[in-house]
Amino acid sequence: MTTAPWTEATSRDLMNVGGRLANLVRGEGSHVWDDEGRRYLDFLGGIAVNSLGHAHPVFAEAVSRQAATLAHVSNYFATPPQLELAARLKRLAGTGESGRVFLANSGTEANETALKLARLHGGRTGRGAILCLEGAFHGRSTGALAITPKAAYQEPFAPLLPGVRTVARSIAALEEAFAAGDVAAIFIEPIQGEAGVVELPEGFLRRARELATENDALLILDEVQTGSGRTGEWFAFQREGIVPDAVTLAKAVAAGFPASALITFGAASDLFFPGTHNSTFGGNPLASAVANAVLAHIEDTDLLANVTARGAELRAGVEGMRLVAGTRGAGLLIGIELDRPVAAEIAQEALTRGLVVNAPAPDVIRIAPAYTIGDDEIAEFLSLFRDALAAVADARPSEVPA
Ligand SMILES: *Cc1c(COP(=O)(O)O)cnc(C)c1O
Image (cartoon, rainbow, N blue to C red; front, side, top):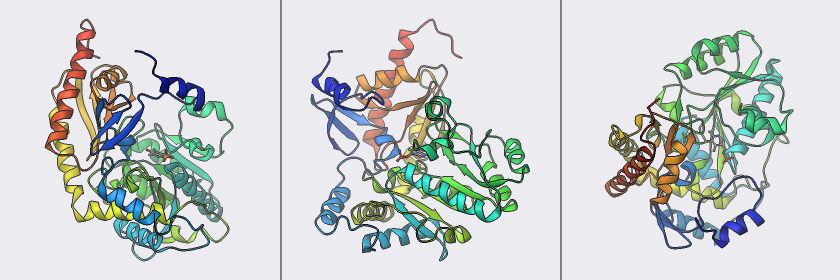
């Protein structure tokens, strides 16, 4: 590969936190274009963010209309878009009257807010431990990092928040973790996106709900990746028939505009009080108006039905392809399991062919396309992905499947 000017600028000017794959200049629907005019089918969707694809008229119109009306006023003031968003999120989450919403700007911040909620609750009950799951990803701030038990992420920044325990993804381990009687809260992703679209054991969330209730602990769900309709329901917990004490949202909620939320249910709604938390940008009218427009569009056009249907088509479509061992996930958050650890090579081959996917684990390809995809995008994906798989399989003919 030749070195383009943008790669030099990247390594010279951007903080050295990771590589950039291409220099993208434009997007439309499920496609993006780079600075040399190359077109890519974007099935990563900005890491499960671009729920309406790129440059959707509803998104563009909401940004420009609200930017030309009122973009920012600080948290000293309420605004109509903010009030509308809070009411909408309460309705979609099914909190009833007693729910409350804190609006922020990123998934990390929403989880940081949830950690403070857990601390406030633990202060009341005298039980201070916070549980997270093996494989969890909750963000990179020092608080959210403390409940993201990955050595490579944590070690350079130790010591982190004390009182955190990591629980294996089994019901037995969950029961043992609560048996100590010291738990303030447990953080759970209903499907662990960053770990490789890892699903929890059957009944795990329901058991967590029971144990949290019995132990006066908060069940806090991180739906930053699974929420906002990604799984075909507004929230993944709605697939399990349980109700959490709190849930966080971000990624797809405003389809690419930075926005996030912590939604509380019942008594957890009364833990924060004035002076305990806030954000300058959080809940600004611009972000809130975009989230409202996006969520209303998803609702009005019944896009969640498309998420479910297209997810099933994609999973059926990749079954039986070379190197593919199976699929997991829900809706349009899909992990394609490989029979050997070649996910990084496949993602690279796909990119070369004009397809964006990623490799969250050595043997998993993740796709999280726009909710708006149709027959054409699916056909294009299946064709490009099949070619990328074949290229990797042909390059390593001697390798035996795991
Ligand atoms: C992406 C992600 C986060 C972090 O969100 P940011 O917006 O990057 O801060 C937290 N939790 C989960 C489950 C995520 O997928």
